[in-house]
View 1 (tube, rainbow, N blue to C red):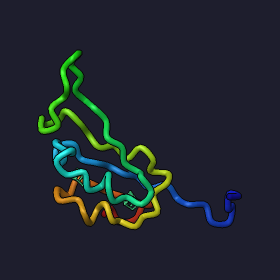
View 2: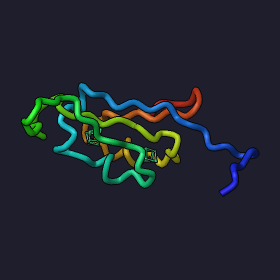
View 3: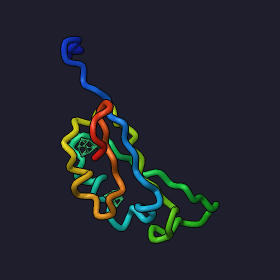
View 4: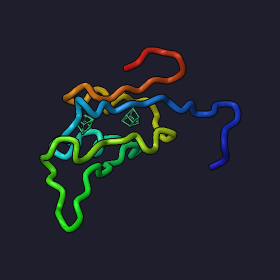
Length: 95
Ligand code: SF4
Ligand code: SF4
């Protein structure tokens, strides 16, 4: 698909609050529902030869790795039970 110079898709600022979402694998809503697969799960805690406990706080985190693909549908913001996600286009309102 050719790049549309007349209507370039803006890239939003996005945050996922690690304090509010500290056990993401017990939820995974944003990871499962984003139509653009913007989010990725990263492992924060590594112990050699030991499987990381999915229920341990701060062992994993969600990151908006592919925010350039975001369409601004706000499904993730509306679905997050911990109100941990913000998506902001330009200087507009933070949701
Ligand atoms: S606003 Fe929509 S496209 Fe963007 S990250 Fe959230 S669910 Fe995905
Ligand atoms: S929807 Fe919210 S609480 Fe659930 S994994 Fe994503 S950021 Fe964390």
